[in-house]
Each structure stands twice: as C-alpha cells, then as structure tokens.
Length: 530
Image (cartoon, rainbow, N blue to C red; front, side, top):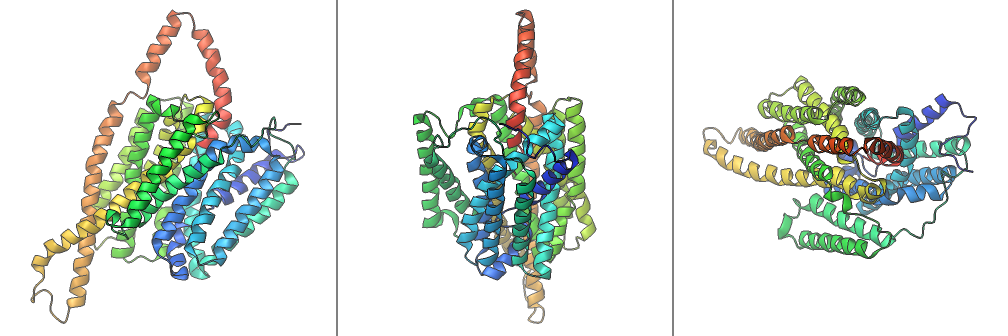
C-alpha cells in the first residue's frame, strides 16, 4: 500500500494542517547555533566567535549535502518511522549542544542537524504544494512564513539566554522535537510514499567530498580575518583542500553511472543568470555584519535590542509575500518584481549611508529595515523561482545541493568575509586621516579616554559608509542589468511562434502539462531550503 499523504485518513484536515504548521515552526528555525544568542554561547564556552560562524555555515552545508538524495530516502522508508527517528535525532543533537562547551561538537552537530532537517522538511512541502497548487504562490506564502519565523526565533533565543542562560533555548528546542515525534507517531500513517527503492545506489564518498569542499571553504570564510587570510598557513591549506576536494568530486561524477551531482543545469541560461542574481543578493545580505558592528559597536545596543532589529523586517517580509502571491496569481512577468526587490535593497543601503551618525536613534531603523525585509523576501521568492524554472526533475534534483549552498552559504559568506576585511582596513585608514586632529589641545590628559573613543567610533562609521557607498554603486549596475535582461521573454515568444507554424502547439501544451505535474511535486519542495 502507498500513501502520498502524511497522516492517517481518520485525522481531520484542519488537524493535519495544524500539525504541519507546528512541525514547520519547530524544524525550520532549528540549527546548531542561533544568531540571537551567539554572543552568549561565546561567553559561556570561552571559544572564539569564528567557531560558531563556522557552525552556522555547517547547517546549510548539511542541507545541501542531503538534497540530492532526499527523494531516494523519502521513498525507501515508511513515513512514520522516518519522521519519528529524524525528530528524535534532531532533539538529541539539540540537547547535545546544550551540554557541551567544545566548539567542534557544535560544528559537527550543526552539520548533522542540517542533513537530517532537510529530510524532515521535504515531507512538509509536498502536502503544502498540493494545497496551494501554484508554485509561485507557494513560494510567496512559504518564504514569508519561514523568514518571519527565523527572525522571531532569533529574538526569543536572545531573550531566553538573557533571562536564564544560553543552554535553555537548546533544551526547549529538544523538548519540542521529542513532543512532535510522539504526536507524529500517533497521527502519521505507516505506509510507503511510493515504490520502495534501495539505498545502495547512494554514493557516500561523493557526499563526503561535497561536505569537505564546503566545510573547508567555510573555515576560510570564518577564520580568514582572525588569521590574516593568506598570511596564515591554515587558511592556505584549507583553501587548497577545498579546491582538491571539489576537483575530486567533479571527476568522480563523470565516472559514476548514477552520479550524486549533475553539472548539466549550469549550462542553462536562466540558471546562470539566476545564480548571478543570487550572488548579488548575497552582496546586500552580507551587510548584516556591518549593521551589527554599527548597532553594537557604535550605538551600544545589547543583544536583545539588536535582535529586535530583525523583527522590524517582518512588515517588509509580509508585503513581499503578499505582492508575490498577487504577482504569480496574475502571471505577471518577473522582471519588475525582481527590479523592485533590488531597488528596495539599494534603498536600504542609501538610507544607511546617509543616516549612520552617533546620534542615530531607534526610530531611524524602521525605514531601512522595512526596505531590507521587502528586498530580501521578494528576491528570495522571485530569483529562486526564475533559477529553477523549466528544469527537468532529474537534472534539477542532481544539482540542487550546489544551488542551495551557493545561495545560502557561498554568496553571503563570501561578501561577509570581504566586508569584514574592508571594515578593518578602512578603519585603519580613517584613524590615520583623523590623526591630524589629535594634538594636545583636543586630546588632553584629562579627556584622553573620551577623545580616543570618539575617534574610534567615527572611524567605524567612516569605514561603514565607504562600504555602503561601494555597494550602492554596484547595486546601480545590478539594476541596469535586471532592467535590460530579457528573462526568457524573447526566446519563449520565438519558440511558441515556431511551434504554432509547425502544428505542434497542442503537443507542446500537453507535454508542458505533464512536466508540470511531475516537477511541482518534488522540484518546488527544494526551493525553500533555508
């Protein structure tokens, strides 16, 4: 017997939806580290912040490593058995993090959490897709929910850490996983999704090479500034190891009958342009490190107040989701929706460029964070939709792990590392420029501490403004690129004209309907892998 649903037939539909929402609310923000309480974990463990940045990247890498095999794992086991074991394992890993002070355990558990988390979330996307039907509308609703959830979880991670300690939030998440495992053991059916398939076709060596490639890269991005980049032997060795691992991974895929990864989709025009736009989105999302330096280092915000800034993006997320649902329902071309997202990001950078002063108050954050929320939400939805559009299911599933890692780790991690280096470099230059005002008249022995502190704060502001200025200039170039890009319009119109002339339009429509039926069940489920 096969059952493509999740729950027993006797479970009412509203209860099924409630269980899915509860599962999403717990699993989607689950990770090895949480941005809201990293500073408290650092204080509690005595380890450097870079270790927990590495652990944060490891969660995404684990999700990307799981993605190419997730369909085979889904079809191999009964839904109830798999879901229960996965939720218990996630709970145990979260509890493990609450009891350790070794940062390497955080990194290992984060990698495992990302890997297991992807197996859980793929089960949730299919019924939600069936309910909503339209892929773009599904993205609009789902991304909005997940992004709001991530900001809320980050805030509560900080609040719980302040009221109790950082271990409590991990315990809470572990208990939530155990409760959900018990509920799903009761309500889920014990049938297979489809025809049972073997696991021995999975190439575990390729998975190991995939993980090593990006874990070494994550080490470079996380520890580059701390170890002075390529003046460090560790950074050089890690860079070489990442390159060699990726080369071995690519070579191995050419020799396998059933490759773990496929590079075929990267020859597609929409994939190439989509990856470029995702990379440019990373340029804007990487500004979070600059924003944190300004909020905490200059304005003196505590971690809870800094976490509240993330909540200010929620109205922008909601607006982006509502616009996306309307946009895809009316089947309006994507160009102007993507253009509006990048415009909002440039607006955020412009406001921050002109507003960063020592007198910056909390109300000044409302507009830039709203623009950032709308830009982030609209671009996550629209660019991901465009990138994965019109891909065959087999090719897409065999390459989606690379695309997920590119979007959530490589693009953001690269620019975060670059901004971190330039922020330090520009501060040194700014202090040198400000030194002309440092003499016995302005910095007397009585006010030396106050004077030097003001100079340091102004140096941070100057460095941040310089980076935002370059981002604005690059962003204008991105806007020009988006405005002039065809987004497949000319090619599709020409193809349709040829099919009509050749009498194949009916056949083309039939094939399109069949392909959509196959793709929208599995392919779209990979999109929201945050």
